[in-house]
Length: 240
Length: 240
Picture 1 (tube, chains in turn blue, orange):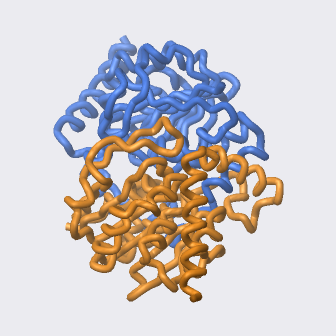
Picture 2 (cartoon, chains in turn green, blue):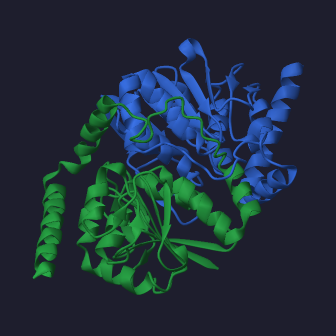
């Protein structure tokens, strides 16, 4: 069995992990679980989508593949010592440690991306670089670390590309192609502004405003500000 | 407010609706809800993903947009008289009636696609045509009905393209582009077998076997067989 542990935390962005889940669950002998502090419902950033965590971190001591999604809740998750400790323990032993979107901020906070190249949602590249990570803006899937087993993907929908690549690595190209057909992943967006390099300044501004609806909540602001302070102070202290 | 009602039923395929949800929830004044017989947890086809229905059908008498996902559970949903009745009542009044993947089989069973063009997952085109629907295999998003307000999408991941197109129609191209950037929808699959026309015979076979893992369960088989019988008998009886 390939145990696939998808991490859930409050205010996740659902597509970040549902895309990869739909691909990875079709791997031969895939054993997918959703892990959190304890089994039970976890609420998405939208406030209307609720997904169940099936297992606790303690019940998941040796996953083969870890996937951590992003979302406005990533700043809270990055401050979650229990989650960071779990990532530090199971990450190095797992065959694959992966993230989608701002999930990489949580991996960075746990120290798993120290000195490595990684990507994240375009709006959080600066936050990622504060952790001493080389934040990559022009690659959708970035491989790094020992044997390139730490793989980070860009924002939200990039998780599908990440998972298809992982499926190829884990089960071979033939299986990956069959999965791609099973989910009919032959994307045909009728617009072409899915990357910052392709979008107008007006679109980038409108998108930033749109995203800030989720980020502007006081508790999220407080956590992200706190995180920036922590990193800034840590940098200053390291200089002395 | 634009009330967006996403239908849930047991054995749904999650990406079918999580893709569109992630796009549509960013529309100005979007009011997304997940509807089922009653509020509560609903289990996906994988058996490991649980999503919460937030409202009952009865509590949702006038949605502006209906989206019904596909999945092996579609055959059960197609036999669900309460759901069919709800679709027949709210469908014609809604501004948009939409489906992803085999969600169109449920719309067809409710009689909403009579004599229209529609699409579905490539593996279920025949099932769809049994309802007197012109099943389209080479368009990812198909518009039909009065004012083209009934929109069906191909399998699983096609829901993202559907939703981006809907966002464009509902809120304009600028908003849709901002949403596309927000979810960084700049797809770059490293393989190219996402449509049957691009896949080898071996890939189609492997994919069919893969999908049958979900479909081969006795209760699903029984329901889909029953559905085929019902349609065949209805056709015979209509001839007399």
